[in-house]
Image (cartoon, rainbow, N blue to C red; front, side, top):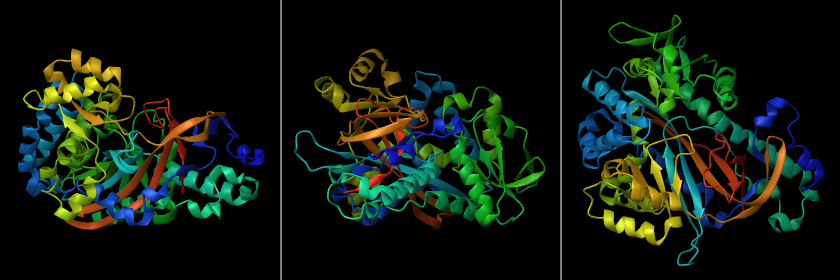
Length: 471
């Protein structure tokens, strides 16, 4: 890499030292992914979560959860999430559905994450496979958009100094970077929901964690909402929202004397967000208000690992998609297995893991990074956890992505080595009474990490922001 180009990636202030980026775009083999034509696939994977959350379908889908069983999963979670995670969320969902639903609209800001699987046996050609679908607090849209702009600038400014061997003889380098509209698409979706609420003087509340460490990404959303749409934003924690007001028969949500049009959750997805009953009071108050939620509690639950595993089964998938749509989406699924005590496949699944421990990942009903189990940890968990505890996990076939050499910049220091990348595709969806008002692709995120690292979260410190260089 040219020295001048590398200097652009060196933080110039202490505030920038928390920014983790790749020094240049990372090659991503586009022959396995037609960027433009694949957007419908990403949208279909994201919008599949909407039908299970519709009011008219809630009871039957909740019965499906019982059969799978999500309720049992929430009861048997072996860590602190047992009290503070999925089970109270289900209780809040039942409370919301059994009461009168005053807000029929819901906004989704999703990120569907993928890796390019490179079959070590060469039995199949490399293919794009889904890691997970995030339906709450999908982060780094704005920062990834800025990283794309930085990398485009670097390629255009220093193209003549970049050795041809680095990317190959591919012509104009900047043309290989796909446009990333996330910085504008996400605020536009929030503004669309605000407009749909119909009160121009109302505000959007960002529901955030106390001492939020990822505020920079959120602030870009806030600033763009004002500069582009003249919509004001309040930032409040769940604890603070417990003292909000709900007014009138229509249950408008008011914070500090101002009506709230949209509640955008950037918190509430991890057990530590609920250290007391006060936070649950705040969450329930918001859920039962007229404010449009992003996401509402049903949307949130539809993104849990267990529901994703159930939705990946052919019969469940075809309850929501046509046959042609299902075939398209299934191409991106890797193996997902439930670990229910009554499952006749459980002995076979355990035997598969014992024969190939590195080929699987054990995932709990948790978000935020750093929670998954790999390799021998999976074997140990299957041997030591009780049958009831195992039900709180799903097992996923491990995706083995192609490695690429890269230079990563973390806290101002360069780190080089073989890396792997995870591609996140953002989409936004606004529905009201089952009608799609908005359903669009909204940009992308590429996270790159050293291939020796299992976890992949940027905020958790495992990965850096990058950009896909399509080759």
